[in-house]
Amino acid sequence: MSPQSERALYQCMRLPHCPRIAIALNLLLVLATLAGCEGCGCTPTDPNAPPPPYNLGLVPTALDIAWPTEPMVDREVVVEDPEELINGYFESNTTLRVTVDLDELIIDADDVVVAPEQGVRIQTLRILRGRERLRFEGGSYGKIILALLT
Image (cartoon, rainbow, N blue to C red):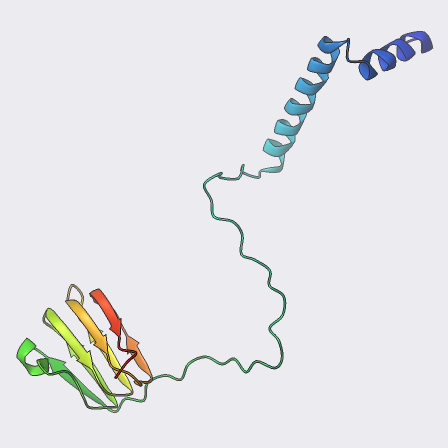
């Protein structure tokens, strides 16, 4: 290409009166971008995907953060009849193996593991105020109520 042709092409690309070349260059740029993306093996981002987690920085050293303490259990109780727990459960350090559906389970004890068998449903689980170290393993729950007032 002669210097005059290069200069003319350069001038034409800079001026808005030459839309065909601008459209062709934009199309070429889009195709090059798509080919580059396919070539790298990446997948396009899903517009419905949730945003990435926020980077909140380091946790302040003044905060003492630790994993919760596991419940300390030393016995297991198998619940086979809903009438056994009609007034709630009040004994600490226990694993409750629930084998039957319950309308309501009230927990008023510390260090309790509630472990319903597969397919068992507890409609309402009520945890009274001040209870500590509770764990729930499996089952399904209709609602969980944390009693905040006495």
